[in-house]
Length: 130
Length: 154
View (cartoon, rainbow over the protein chains, first blue to last red):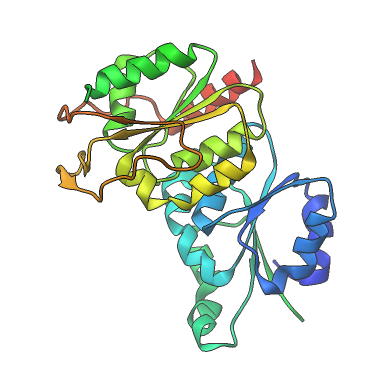
């Protein structure tokens, strides 16, 4: 699923997410500011994989979690997705800022969806800034 | 310096049967399982090296139960950033222990970088001896997850 930045918070809360953790991205500013202005718990992690670990722990307590990151951070979450989330059947909702214009974002910008499809990870939303 | 077995027994005696324990990849999970194979309050985190304190934080933020993480030294170093996130969360029900044997023991005793004496968010670092091969954990991921969810809801 692909949606615009200003629709993300409403979509995510409509899906029942009540625990937010991630590494901030400029594409997700509107979304991140809406989290900050809400009463939901929000944790800013120091690494995207740690955000997945924190979300995993929260999921076991019954929380519905949302992990936000930019697509370059997708490379950082492959390990906890393959070694933790998939084996235990716990799938936090990933909100991924789709960066693709600058050289450092070009490669991941072209393969992010393919990578998630290869992992068979379906619970994600790609966010475009326009 | 004490044995890994003694360190684990001391941690379990300290926090008791009502706490939830999250055990690290490698020989820590295996050693805990072989000591307490029937306990339903242990989450064996066998993959995703370094994630045990992260899982502990996510759990501790959303339960009143005590959450006890038993990590290893190389695993702590792999995701040192989480120590600061744990410090900032200011929880009084999360206890992260680090069993420090100076190496990646389960993959062949390869030396890891040595730890500092203290880290934020870390309850205690315990220096341990290597004890060699330990049989694997005998609980499936599905059973383990079900046990923990049930225990969290008790």
